[in-house]
Length: 108
Image (cartoon, rainbow, N blue to C red; front, side, top):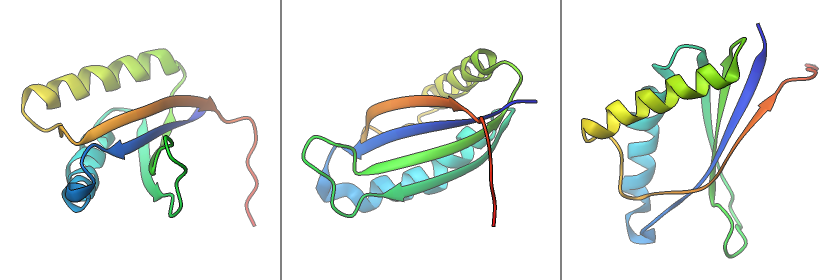
């Protein structure tokens, strides 16, 4: 099974509500995404000195799937269902979404 990395670069649409945004992302959105088959790990990072116009946050999702297109379609369907249930946040500002196939790995 192939290993993939999905990187979502985001900003909070309202800096005054960043704490609320981070709580939603960590407690609601990440668990919702991890309900998607093949999505095995989620991690978030904050750029402590973001350049203007660049994303302040990134979320990385580790995926195990033979067909990444099917995995991404399943994710999209899952998120659409969550959106219909009111589980998405108006504070989410998506800057970019990129998918990478693992070509090598090394651990210490």
